[in-house]
Image 1: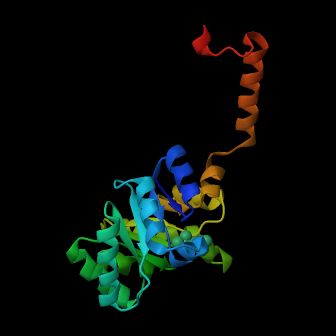
Image 2 (image 1 turned 30 degrees about the vertical axis):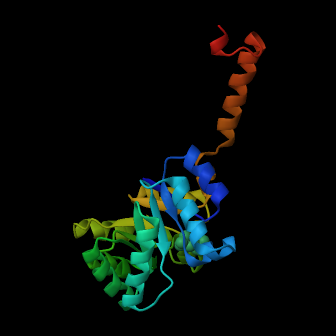
Image 3 (image 1 turned 60 degrees about the horizontal axis):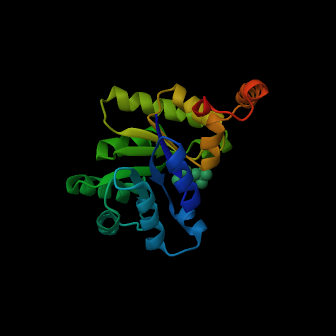
Length: 224
Ligand code: G3P
């Protein structure tokens, strides 16, 4: 499983980059706008925190294929490293994906809600497809079932394209996607934390500490 952080909150990125096996950061125009700050200093700060070897996915704001390509080239040039431009699925987006494939710029095709969209994106050359799990669940679609169908179809057609499931609201959705072989997920820092938290774990650790300090006080192994 590839874990990616879906935020432009620099504090959250610093924290998660230190404490979790993070493969990178994704953003979208809504996430960037939430930071209410200048675009370039923000995305360059994200790159500086995660370094060149981790993935940074930044979404285009343009609609015509040629404009998307122009923006992607600039983003790649300024952000460098493992960079992917996020492009919403659509005719112009597919055209841009095919053009970017020739230029060697990675594409994450986003705003995916069906397996047919995902398969087309993969055939156009996208490196990742990003289905929106919680937004599907919100309209009584089954987000994880859609992810499962996409995983199966990409495998059936021998595609290298990976599923980057997005739009999660809880750990259970992530678990269900992991269970069907979803290659990667992009989640908030809260969900990363929820994925490793359990009250029984807290109780177990409290018990270990109590038993140890009851006999050895504040001593640690280094003190013996
Ligand atoms: O970046 C795409 C996705 O993660 C959006 O999530 O919470 O706006 O549905 P959300």
